Image 1 (cartoon, rainbow, N blue to C red):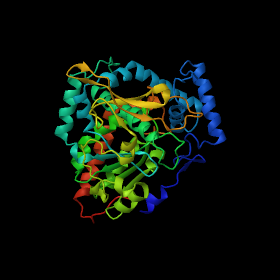
Image 2: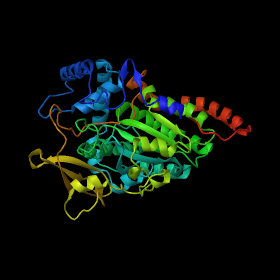
Image 3: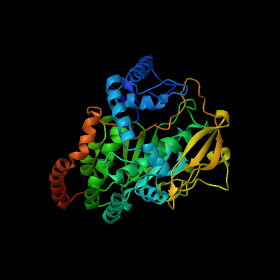
Image 4: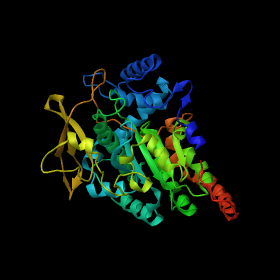
Length: 421
């Protein structure tokens, strides 16, 4: 686990980027100055208003700054492209009106929120790759491309299957993260939660399956990198097969160096001890040595401490399927969870529960419904580079084809079964 140990403290360009550094409450003077300069620059360009409430909260602006190494003009370029992309694809309408069944079909293909948090209060997600066999992915993609699951008008260039994926990113930024932010039983309660921790289980996945998933996962990663920066923190890769070190060579090119530095590739003997460093045993699924009853595809198994502060309404005793987000009520003293989306062609807008506002808002602007997030973009690439990556998949595939041939030859050679670290 020597490599994993080396990843615990990460510094890029003199900046310590380990949480909570670079987040509200833990900004250096230089970073504070960058945030203010970014606001002024965006205001001049007509992309930001100070309010109150501000058009975009500080934690959203900081995600773009962190992603672009605190260079204001670079952050502006990504922010501008993202705002235009969101408007062109009506992301707000998409999330409000997406068919609940279509949303759930998409959810089952991507990381699932366990309903729990890591030791820092960051939401914990589980992703088991083995469920994404070629037939399942092909059926999903054909279904997604043949129907528009929401009332959103799109730019025509972003595939429907990816737009559905972005509804899940909206759920992360507008439901899971705000809920975790209001929980004060964490080490840095004055810092809003804008990250996610992920357990990625790659056990029982063959080389052929990795290969078949390449285009599916690369396209999703490319666009997410461009438009949802900096909400990915730790990634724990578990169950890596012997050939994973070679596969990892092309997978890690989808991420920037900072994100790669946060990835832990664990051997079987390291799983329990490493996870427990970051996650309390009661919040680790039993399959990985913890105490939590949680299987992939399950609805979130809510943290008892979260349950204690929720007041259910309208007959609800748990969060329903489909999209939801939080809105201020009672003069801002409480947040209400609103279930949205469509069922049977009828749009829903139902209050599920309320929660008292506990997060201190001093110096923090009000959350905006246009907040966005996810894996950080390549530090040495522009947003346009990332978007063009989707168009250049054929080139990437050619390169990867050559790699596959090398891997196939290597796989025929006798080797000791080892785990990539």
